Amino acid sequence: MSDEHHPDTLAIHAGQDPEPIYGAVNVPIYQTSTFAQEGVGRPRRWDYARAGNPTRAAFETALAALEGGSWCRAFASGLAAEHTLLLTLRPGDHVLLGTDVYGGTYRLLARVFEPWGLTHSACDLTDLDAVRAAVRDETRLVWIETPSNPMLEIVDVAGVAAIAHEAGALAVVDNTFATPALQRPLALGADVVVHSVTKYLGGHSDLIGGAIVTNDEDLGERLAFLVNAVGAIPGPTDSYLALRGLKTLGVRMRRHSENAERIARFLASHPSVPEVRYPGLATHPGHEVAARQMRGGFGGMVSFRAGSRDRAIRIAEGTELFWLAESLGGVESLIEVPGAMTHASVAGSPLEVPADLVRLSVGLEDPRDLEADLARVLEG
Ligand SMILES: *Cc1c(COP(=O)(O)O)cnc(C)c1O
Image (cartoon, rainbow, N blue to C red; front, side):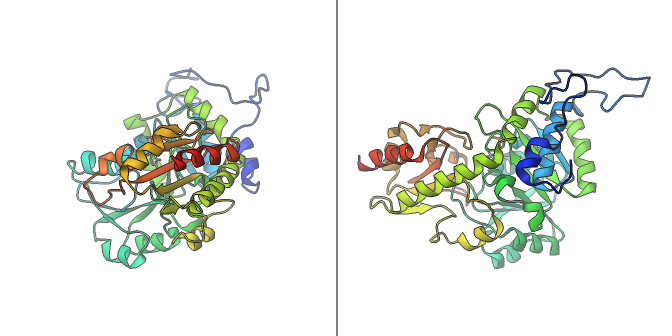
């Protein structure tokens, strides 16, 4: 598939030629653990499905095309992808991350890799001087999340990647919130993209998955070894669901963004809401950078302050269409209180989030119904 096609075309065609025997237009679910070999030591493409599987490979090819990467591998979860990526580092190496980052990423660094000898520290990645001051001789990775979870901060990917490169480190972008439909970090100068496929790429809250994409051939080679050596891989059925989700990524992300922007404006105009965080609002401190590095929308996530923890909890427990749940990125709208739920594991760390913060994953329902749902609980 030519890389010259536009993203919505690549999502449906890259890696997805009709199946050669019957012409099935969907890549089959190759539910197999092994492959018959043509001779001793002469496998066809794969010898054993830990290393690769045709359904998984179709998803990887399509996602690589969307991210503009030459190398992509899928994983059993976003954290499995992150874990495998961090295994390319050695004890004594340092990871610099932002002060607003997915709680599980922080837990992986603090509770799994720190005892193993990998060090990390957090700084405000929205401040390039702070990033320059925080990189160390041992820094090997700068871990960027933009928009970040749950504060929806915007990091200048090109700016931070340049500082990382000067320091001899790689810039990694967790592109889960934006997806390649809205933001392509490799084109902005990042070296590696990681995803929780669980969220928007899968898009229907029916699978757990992860992915890594890069253009760095050496890194790809080391990662391909680790994929097989460590084995944190997704099964063929989840790979099929991920690919099925990916096909509609462009239309979904545009509609998620439209709905979220409408909800953000509604909340910003509501007298009982002290602060709304949405990068599409001109009042957001990162709006200009977001407008420069994102395309087609600002994503489906909106966070706001409720004034107090109790009110945040009452709001999250009061909505009818927004279901109270962790996770995000599906067609259905979700609501949660990060300080008490997804980000409870960062309490007391530099990453602690405001207790009255409410996070919305704005789904694909009619936005008038979503707005009415929120209006009702905000009156209460
Ligand atoms: C959910 C999430 C992850 C972890 O992915 P899993 O698929 O849940 O393991 C990583 N980063 C971000 C931004 C996420 O939202």
